[in-house]
Length: 72
Image 1: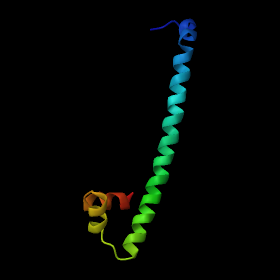
Image 2 (image 1 turned 45 degrees about the vertical axis):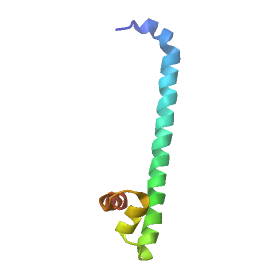
Image 3 (image 1 turned 90 degrees about the horizontal axis):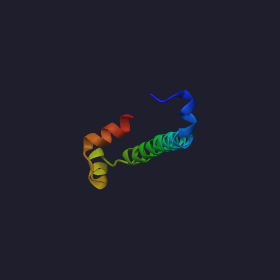
């Protein structure tokens, strides 16, 4: 265990950890926004009569994956 007085020697590492954490939080927020947008786009297709199977085929995923995306 490092002596608390010696933690100053790790200041740049702590700064880097904080920077990486902020980036991760930012990317998580973006991922949530994109998930909402994706769901809205797919719902628009469904409202126009496109089936989940059709969407799945076009996106190269399973119908179950589409169901999960729509449920979130």
